[in-house]
Structures are given as structure tokens and as C-alpha cells.
Image: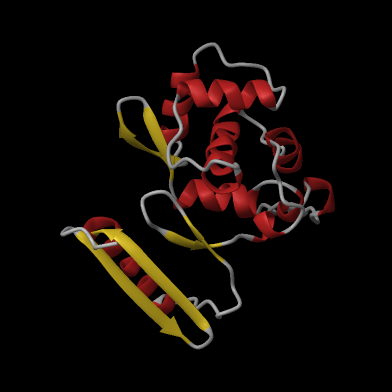
Length: 184
């Protein structure tokens, strides 16, 4: 089979790990750039750290939430993360669709959010597009075009580290006592 004129093939080997990328120039370049960022970044991943290839060619380390329990249904993921508002729930849904769904998607829209709320058995907001816009205004999502939004690093950190059992309950945190200031 002859290679097409605009098709590129790159083979990278690092230790025992070997990655072979083949396809259109733009996709190959994005994957190689993402891989080099992972290797050169502040947190180096070892060869044993599993990587997930996201749509658009970006490589990301598989999170602990993905490795443990293998969340495949959105309802149990919502129950674990316990979002306290529709805005947090929009970030949770976006995270789920981007990293945990069987068919990952890079963006979320009003229809996908409504479906996520329905599957999670969460009350539907009156207008899901407003919920997504409010999540963008809160800093959890970025707008990518006409009615589509993408989870940004702030939203990722909220879902991965700020929600659920790893975030810690208010009851387990020690309460600080307020001291009264004395009048002089």
C-alpha cells in the first residue's frame, strides 16, 4: 500500500515505550507536540504512566478517577462527585464526556448537557444553554463556537480535585474559632 502524498508517519521510542503516529500532517504535529509537552513538562510521566489520546490528537495521562473503578456510567460518576449546583454539574458532565465516556467528545453542548442530566437523574435546568454559559462565566468552561463549550484547566481541577470524596467533607475539616478583639 503506497503512502498518500499528505500522509506523515512518525515513530518515537523512549525506553521501553514506542509510539507510532500516522496520518495528516496537522494531526501528527499536534500529537508530537503534545507528547513532547508531556515529556518536557514540569511533571514528567514515567513510561509506565498510561496515556490517553484525545480527539484532536492531544495526549493526556489517564487520571486516577479513570484508573479506579472504571466509571462507565454517568450516574455513578455524578453520585461520586456530588456537584452542588447546575454549574458544577455542567463541569462534571463535560469532564465525563471528555475523559470517561466510551466515545469521548472534546466539547459539550446544550443537548449533551440535557442528556447528561437526564441520565444522572438530576433535575433539568430550564435552559441548558444558560447553564453552560454560566459555567463559562464561572471559569469552568471555554466557549469553542456556536453553543459548544470545552472543559478548561480550572474546570478540570474542580472535578478532579475539588469535588467528591477526595475534596473532603465540611464535617471533617476542623473549624476555626473566631476571637473577639478587645477594646482598648
